Image (cartoon, rainbow, N blue to C red; front, side, top):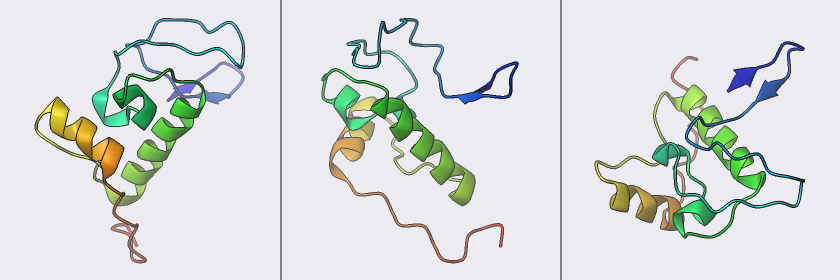
Length: 97
């Protein structure tokens, strides 16, 4: 997450260095941080700004639970989990309460 000079928060990944031309533009790269990949990126489909919302959801989940919603010791297993497994629900008693 980045904080701009005018206090705007932006989600980004240094692994992706492509400026999209408009709000309906899509990208087709396969780089970035695997833990935050959206399902469409895992399935080699184009992604849009919705993928950034997915990544933000992963970040919020980590902030609440202190753990990753999808974890695996290899990329193939991680991709499988992102595409097919549901996220473990948040506990009503979070670790910091």
